[in-house]
Image (cartoon, rainbow, N blue to C red; front, side, top):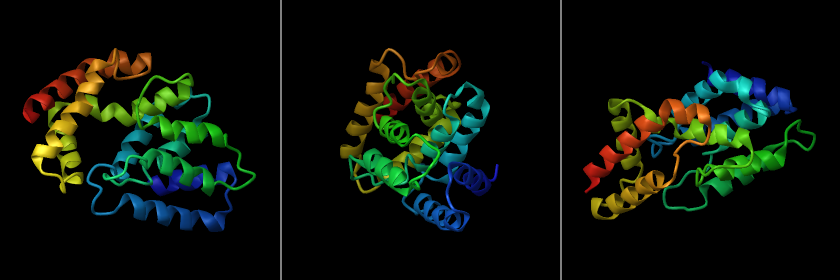
Length: 204
């Protein structure tokens, strides 16, 4: 998959001027390629877009979902608690006035990736599940994932990081479901819960 081509095609369809698209791509590529991003990087976008391509036929607003994927982590600083809000604001502000896109939906979608809770909009539930699919990888890949997350929080010693990470993981287990679509619950819920339980044990 060529991420830049996918991005360019989307922005053309939305109504961006072609001479602005290259600059927007370079800005996005730079943001997702900083050294501090061990997990929340271009590879994460690629994996989400692979899910998007697989389930696109289930989406009522595919362009909104794809645009939200590209921008849901554009602002990412581990010391902040408003990354999703700032990312949503950035994404919507970038849109041209005549954009063929539901701006409010895009804003709400990106904000929904903060808590990953069930949403009344089914397309948002698909986006949330695309974002969390990493939790259901086989153990070796999941281990790479949580090691990458740990590196993103490297400024925190274990005695601060481990309880916070454990609390976040336990929150997933406390919910009736981790995933919000029936498709992902059927295919990925059991593996995700098993991975999370194993990681929690390592954090004790």
